[in-house]
Amino acid sequence: MSFSYNKLWKLLIDKNMTKSDLRKAIGISSSTMAKMGKGENVSLDVIDKICKLLDCKVEDILEHIDGNE
Image (cartoon, rainbow, N blue to C red; front, side, top):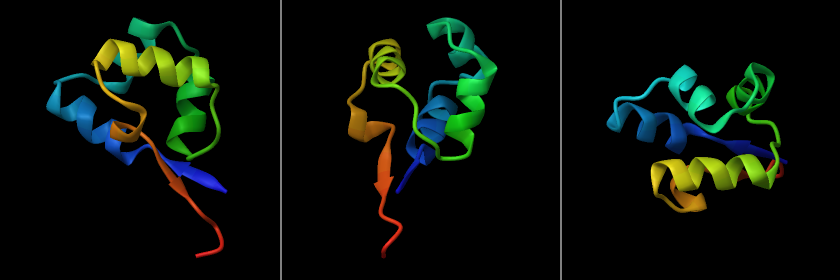
């Protein structure tokens, strides 16, 4: 099981933000950003902070990818 954050990356482009801008704005580490870049799990707290900052819903930034498909 993994996740795709492609929707988040596209949303950042639409909002004229970089990944670094996002990281600094919500106060997460570069290793957490790296996990997201690899489609790995991050805490719901991080997801919540992103959604609050970008004023969006979870489904606007995250997609579950089932490895069995």
